[in-house]
Image (cartoon, rainbow, N blue to C red; front, side, top):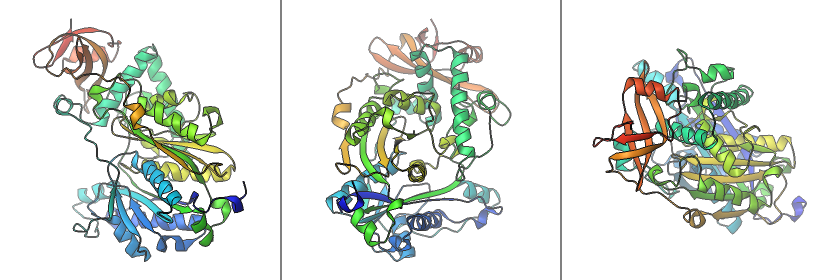
Length: 492
């Protein structure tokens, strides 16, 4: 298909921009909305059409850790744009979901030029505060965007929060143990394999100029605890956890083919989204059918490939959401990707950086440039919010889709998978299904376990030092335990 044959409503990604700052004097850092403006200006320059930012029909911002109530309005003011403003809900899935939404609106004729941006300035803000200084932020708290994009989902129930399973750093290593057991791996062999995989992520980050951490690390350095790399949630050291202590911004510019042509965007800058999907697993981890898989990734990820008319062997480049190793391994397995192949372009959320909800904006921006350098190739980006909860997928290529952009919300099919009841008041005999041992700076502090009961799943804890140490040396999945009335577990 030639460009002259492309439907004028076909959505195209025409500009991708990224921005990184690490000022010697933190208080001199740009505030997040200014970082977004820098990324958008870079995206317009990347498109070869600087006027795109002032001609936008929609400006959407990925929600972040800053006080602005309608940052898109501040961006419109900077660029002289008058388009409608939007702010996303929370979730690492949101950048890809925003691209999916933009493509649908462009295809339907409800949008022409959509700006998508996000930024975090946590590194500079923290360091300024330590010096009793404050980075000046634009005061904006009483303006509301034209629309909120996405759905807020409560992802912790009361029992999970009370038992210490509130944060990603606790739950993803629990998934890791379940994945290890599902493969029948030894604990040492598993740790070796995961560290080798993360070494490849580090290598990608070293080669990525927009990565926050570009220091080379070997698999051994990643795997083993050290003064600068302590254990967090076993088996994860610090260098296996998502890193949000950074100053990064990224932006995308989406257009109709007609608008891109009118703005003078050269066709060699065009990247076509072929298909996108969205879906989510059970809101609460307590109700998942198991803790080593993801029906939502399986259904939505494979459906994205079907809609694009490709199979897994046709995918040339992949960037899987990589907050923790378990997220990568479960995604790759559900999608039919081999764990031995390259699964990141950026370096992932540990090394490239995990700017709260905005990582995938960086992922898509990096994918766009990779595809331009290799015309005709096909790329897949995955996005994950919560605790393997909310998912979005995108298939991209510089070659136009034969049937236009296609999208599907896969929730109905996902909801047909079995779930598990939370047996939250249960005490008595149970079996460990998955676990982690959470570490403080000096020593292990608590073991957190999902246990199976006669009626479902229960969460239990243990703070016995000798048992916690044993749980990091010996496989405890499948071990029979007794859960007390205070929801402490001990070997049966």
